[in-house]
Amino acid sequence: MVKKYVLFFILFIIGSNVAFGFSGGPPAERTGNPGETCGGTTCASNCHTSYSENEGSASFQVNLSASHYTPGDALDITISFANSSAAIYGFEVTAVDADGNIAGTFTPKDNTTQTEAYSGLYAAHTKTGTAKDQWTVQWNAPSWQVTEPITFYAAGNEANGDSSSFNDYIYTANASVTASSTPSSCEAESISASSTDIELQTGETREITVAVKGNNNCDVEGVTVKSKINKGKRSIKISPEKEETDDDGNAIFTITAKKKGNAKVTFKAEKLKTKIKIKVVE
Image (cartoon, rainbow, N blue to C red; front, side, top):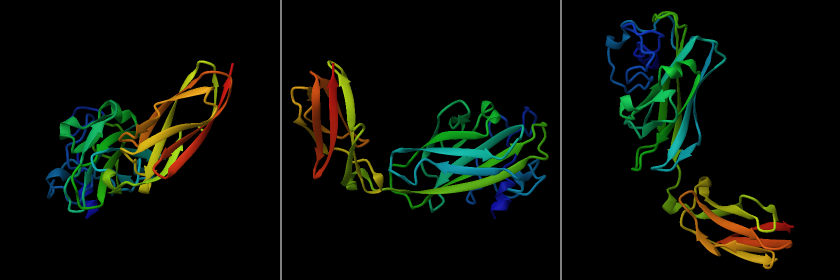
């Protein structure tokens, strides 16, 4: 069935503006998603039919920046070719839930990709992007509950750039992701500081980020992190004394070196704690 749908990947990427050329981006519903409604043989006319799907020797992949997503947050999605020396390339990707409904939206990260022409429901190459064999787009996860998992379907064209639809290789790939625990159910399990052994000169300041993580490495928002100078109160100053974690699970503190000496600081969130050492030199 997937092989049938690759025929729908018509007019994908050619280096000219002839009738079958879509170097500026393909039409929607050309990703290999079985639920797309291109239908029949309408979209198979003048298609890249010289070879069967995935018949070429290149590698085509969809890679996700994480195996889980948080509803309402974003993930980076990378679509790439490897082991290829084609003249030009193209792609299109979409995301659907287990019921076949499009899930979330896409946002371009640079001028090699576009989403606006598809109302954010698909992402594809731009004309500039045809010179690339790898593209990264941002996927904005739905904030509402969907039927898991969410699957990213992508089709790619390894084209010879001869301004025809012949002798181009079409590939398909997919990858899936599931939702992690929502922030409200993310309970603190670990705490860490961005630096644990610091050297400062007198009068110098340094920001320290304290990260609080929960199950599945989720970011714990709204937990209070307290700072305490255990040694060297004359050597350093730290502010604030306590801070709530932001939506990334981070609390930021500023350490100011006052005079030469050694100091130790403990950061504590609920029953978790981490320590750092500071050396102040003149």
